[in-house]
Amino acid sequence: EIVLTQSPATLSLSPGERATLSCRASQSVSSYLAWYQQKPGQAPRLLIYDASNRATGIPARFSGSGSGTDFTLTISSLEPEDFAVYYCQQRSNWPRGTFGQGTKLEIK
Amino acid sequence: QVQLVQSGAEVKKPGSSVKVSCKASGGTFSSYAISWVRQAPGQGLEWMGRIIPILGIANYAQKFQGRVTITADKSTSTAYMELSSLRSEDTAVYYCARDGGVVPAASPRQENWFDPWGQGTLVTVSS
Image 1 (tube, rainbow over the protein chains, first blue to last red):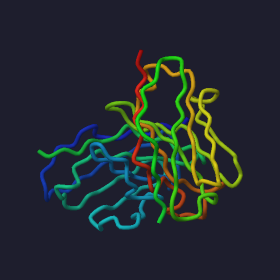
Image 2 (cartoon, one colour):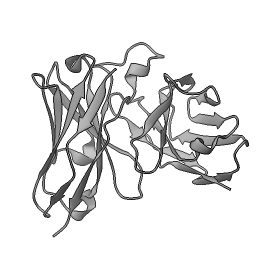
Image 3 (spheres, helix red, strand yellow):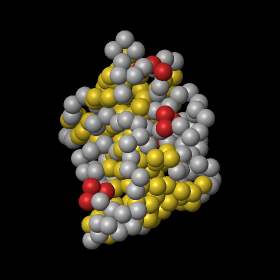
Image 4 (cartoon, rainbow over the protein chains, first blue to last red):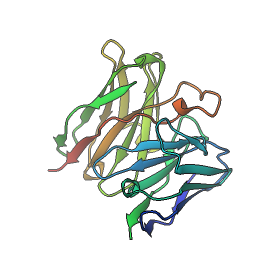
């Protein structure tokens, strides 16, 4: 089973700062990786798919990169609404879709 | 634009079963899969399984094999997730989400991922 490890567990930053979130896979998942954002009391929302493609309606400040085992979600300049929990998900063993444990992005 | 609306919160006794529904509107229900994901209080996301309504074929995560049954009714554009032999650890919010097809479409394709999601259904297991 492929395990996704996200780091850090919690990231404390201020609005306007740049956020860098990491997701590492226990074995290569090629580019079959997505990022989701979840706010309290809400369902997750797809942000990035296939490692680097923004989903429909997602602002340009969100970007994804990486392939193989190491992936990064970058938020170029944090807006107040960006503080949430972020999950990565891999689907290299289709149709299974395992998730990382999440990174909480909190206001400093 | 597909929208997914789930059934309401449930309170169940240990050892019983729960059946959660997920009704789709917009789009073509049968042509894509519906996946189910759960989230225990304060915890992360866990994929449980999925179904492709047009084929009636379901796939399950190993952890839930034998305890979960996912079905779909094409006539009402509704998917169902039934979890049996409930225990306290099954207390969670259960989400449905639109998923891809039998095999992934040539990448990059947004349709291969979980989007959109239902609003979630809280299932509480308590004696």
